[in-house]
Length: 250
Image (cartoon, rainbow, N blue to C red; front, side):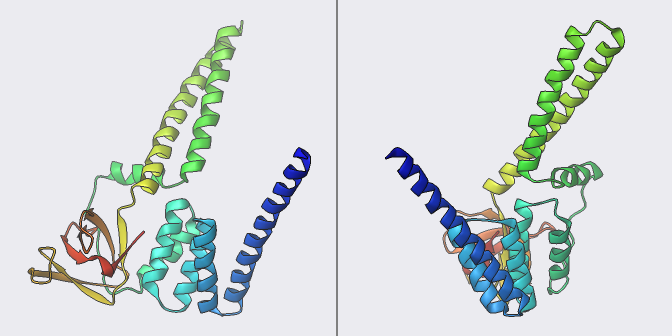
């Protein structure tokens, strides 16, 4: 009886996997046939049922780009980039979509060390960094074993130096993996999806108008405590309040 139940469970699991694959294939076929609205519908259903996927977000972003909905294209490219930060194709398409927006915001200057560190962290995904940390840790143990049990001085040096280098790789990889995990858990980025919206000094329509943002602009949510209004910060450091309906969180 137990074997029959196990077989049935495996058949059900396999059936779900086939359905998911068929749905993805159907959405891809709709995209290839230039049925972009249908592809968008199917990709969004796929995310709602199967969860997040960098590949699906990327294809969804491409579909929105083809319909000239650049705000939604940017939104989905950003979501894909959170899951696969080292993917060059996603970054290229994201920059292409950003070039179609009205607001060209120049980020504030930062120290080159910060820029270099961010580039290193974003060169791989959280999972890839985690596996690198695990692999480096095992190589540390191998290096220590060679150092402790080898009778030759040359091998002892190799083991010690190798263990030290792998320890550095392990620590750096762990730091990068943790940073990527925090990025996924504490998402503060958002994309303006309204055609245009006025940023005000206070969380109400009677506040002083500071500047105007257009669809596709990226902001960072500073205050998320209110339901109808969000305090946001731009990449150039400007701050203000926006209606929550004008934004969609990454």
